[in-house]
Length: 134
Image 1 (cartoon, rainbow, N blue to C red):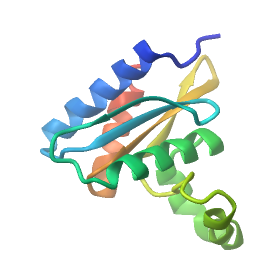
Image 2: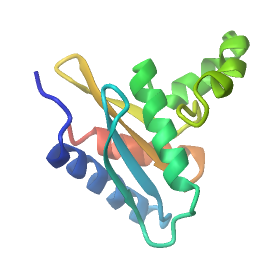
Image 3: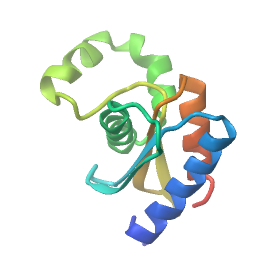
Image 4: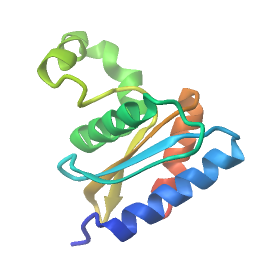
């Protein structure tokens, strides 16, 4: 089974940064492994100072729930108690906001990408660009 490693994480992040440049949005990119451990982080010049935290938390949410945070955001009203409880159970560790996608290889979640710095659709587009490299 393929696992998330530095080389793959860097490749994913570079593709996401390339998309962010096309969008003219400086962003931060976090890549985590399947357990939510940080493998790679990069912040473009001019990206907001909270984008590290948001990109990491989006990646962790995507890895944990094995689905995109765009999808999580669209269904969160189906279980409001869960999402109301998340900040107190795992403070700062999972953000169910658009901009996180799991990285799936051979049917297994090997990690996730999280992006912060743009509008929800922009963050998700950068995730998609990174995800497409795998």
